[in-house]
Structures are given as C-alpha cells and as structure tokens.
Image (cartoon, rainbow, N blue to C red; front, top):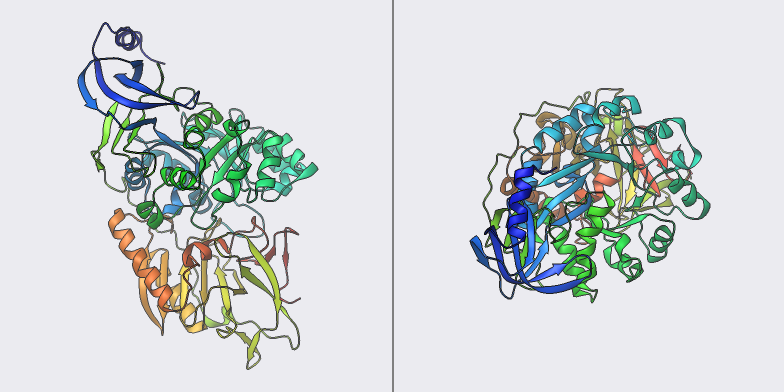
Length: 573
C-alpha cells in the first residue's frame, strides 16, 4: 500500500496543482477498459499514474502521433526454456515492452526441488521487470519418469507466503485431478494458493467439468477453436499460446469474440531465445494477430488488463489514475517494437536502447549432472522377428506426437537407426543420480541423415535425451554433455560440431544473450547440415519428446509412455 505522503503527492499531481515527475505528451493513449484510444497526456508521479488529460511535468516527453499502452504481460512462461538466466531474459523482455510475467519454475524444480524455486526467486529480485511465480504443482509430472526431486504439498507450503508467489502452476496431472487423487487434492488445498493454472490438452465434457471443479481457472493447452470455446464456456481463462514448438495463436483467435475476449490472455509458454531475439515476445503475438486482421484493441486487452485481472493484480494493466506506471510506447500499430518503455515510473528503454544493466547471474551454479557412465549396451534394442515397433511420430510445428507401428531396420539381431525411412533411435538417460535408467525407443520425423543431437533440456524431468543416426555419435553426444554439466550438443563422425553448455541446472546459461545466441546458431546450422528439415525446430522438438503429459507417445528414462493410457507400454506392438 502506498505511503500517506506518496499518495498525497500523487493526488496533488492528479488535481493539476503540482507538476508530474514525467509527462508523456500528446499520444494516442489506449484505454484497456473500453478499448478506445484517447488523445492526451499521461502524468506520472513517482511509480504511479496520476492522471490522463492535459498535464505539465518536470520532465516532458513528446509522444505525439505515437501509441501509448500499458506495459505488456506474459500470462504463462517458463524462464528456463529461454536457456538464459532470469536477469538476462529480463533485458530481452523489457526491450519488447513486457513489464510483468507469470512464471512457472517447474523446469528447475524438477532438477533442484525447492532450492531451484528459491534460486529463481532470488535471481529475480530488484529488477525493472516484475516476475511472479506459480508454484510447480507436478514435480515430477508423473511417476513414469525419474526427476531430481519430489515436491509434495508439505514441501511447497513454506513458499506460499512469498509475496511474489501467487498460486499453483499448471496442473499437468489432469488424470489425477479428474479422479481426485489425494496428492493432487493436497496441493489444491494449500492455504494461500487460491489460484491454479491449468494444463488439460484435449480434455472435454464431464472430464473437463471435473478438472475445473477442482478449482483450476485457466488453460493454455487448447489447440483448436472448438476446444477453446468449450473451456471458456466452462469458466476457464483461455491463454492463447504461441510458443517455439506449439504455434496455436492463429488457430485459437477465431474463438475470441467481443463477448468473451475479456476472459482471454496471451502467453509464450516455452519460447526459445533465438525467436525472442529475432521476433519478440508478447508484442510479437499482438503483431501477428493484427497482421491477420484481428482487432489490435482486443489483443492489447488480452496482453494487459485481462492478464492482470486473471492474477488478481489490480494495480496494473491499464493507463488510469492510481495504476502502476508501467508503459510501452509504439510508433505504429503494425510493428510492435517499443521505442520507449517505462517501468515503475522510470524510463527503462529509450529509442530501443536498454538503460538497465545487470550480470546474467548473481550466484554461481553448481553441477547437477550425476550421470552414470554411458556405454553402448544401453542403446541396444534386441530385435523381435516380424514384430512391429511403436514409433513416436513428430507432428510439425506442434508439441503433440502421434504413434505409428513400423517394422524397424535390424542388423545382427539388433534394431538400428534407419535414415532411409527416417526412423531414428531415441534414448533418455536418467541424469539426477537416482537409478541410472536408460529408456530407448524410435522416432520418425527428425530427418537426420547422420550424427546425433543431445540435450539436458527434456521436459519435465530434464534427463539427458539423445537422438541419432548411429549409436557411436549418440554416445559421444551424451559424454560431451556429461563433461560440461549439461546443455545442447551436435555430434557427427565422433566429433562435437556444436555445443552450448547450460551449467545452471542443465537448463540455463550463465553467459549473456549474444553468447547463447551465437552458440544456438551454430547448433541449428549443424542440425540442418546433418539433415534436419527447415520446418523442424530440432532442439525444441527433442526437448518435448520426453514429456509424458502431452499426447500421444513419449519416451522417459523408464521406457515408452502412452499418454492416452497414461501408462508405460512395451516398444513392441
């Protein structure tokens, strides 16, 4: 709550009896409540908007002809998926006009448990970007994989009281929720966790009723307009997602109407660094929506006020008296790259230049790679004559997969990768020191002609996942990441061609954006050189092949997972 003296100062400015600290003069000011554009000044006193109208100030910034909006908000993202540390990500988001984000740290929690959440809270203190957290509700996501931690309701409870913890993150265990599993109900009953985000891909009818009746009030997994409409009708906030591997925005926008749009938000979920740098964040979602003929005003509401209200933060999301002075200024309504960004009443970006500096990471990371020695026997699949094998089939530009049944290539009694038919070996090594498991399966759709790709970014337990055209390169890629404490690697002919170390939990770099971006470009170059087609984001795709909560077929360290059955299944049909 504002101090009495600060409030008195704001009121004096609002009445026009004292000069504002900053006045944005003469812009087109977006009204989040009505969807209108008003021509006028925005007066700022301290960290607060004092008024809209005609004002004078100690500092006046001419924004005539420009478009002034509230600071943008991302309703759901995973910082870890950007592969840069939180403070480095903050720089990118601020340059894109994003001033508030709602993060679910379940990636790092799956590696480090509560210590990982505490680390993220510490790393996001004292930044000109507000980072609120939703506590991971499913660590591990299922019992069909081995993670680095198990977070029960009792373990999460001490974190609930943190001022930047708003509730429970996406409840991925939708079968357990629908069935009323005790462990799920314990988490939903945590005192202070009144908000809970959803994760219910394809859930419909009475199952959806049960899922939402548990107290879950949003969903970001809809992939069709019909699914989106049903979830809106049942009371969920709809988060329209445009991620690196799940391009859902344009499929969902037809579901948005003037009557339901105030229950819709925008989210990036898992958006990789290269796309954040080259395209943008929430501003990019607005841009592509507008380019396809959708009303800019609705898109802006979805990126500001709607999100603030969904998370019950009634101090932001609008340019109005008493609201937080978080502001983005755009030259036009076509290219949503802000020229000016104000956060808490201070200019943070001016003429597309960031005025805030910080090291990428405040504390040095510890090595989290506890991988046992890898060897070729772990990759061997004894053949079964005449039997078809279950094969994971990649769906381009989606994180969904399909299940195919194919006769694999066999040599000397063992299944081998078949580059002619694009059926490759896929392996997941448990890397948290729990059991030394190795799951081995087959995948179709990568396009690799030779070599191997490896990653310790493997949702959600983040074990080591490797795909390859031959066993030797797969083993070499695994060893390369073991030696650097995790990351991404491309190997061909026994040689490491490209490598991005991710020493922070095997998920994030401790280096700046330019370094990480350069390494990613090398990785993508070599993936393409080895045959990965242009429409497959190789490492993003690889990272989701171990996620046993997204249909249809996945691979964990324990083996193949049929997500529809929510059960481990045999490789052979």
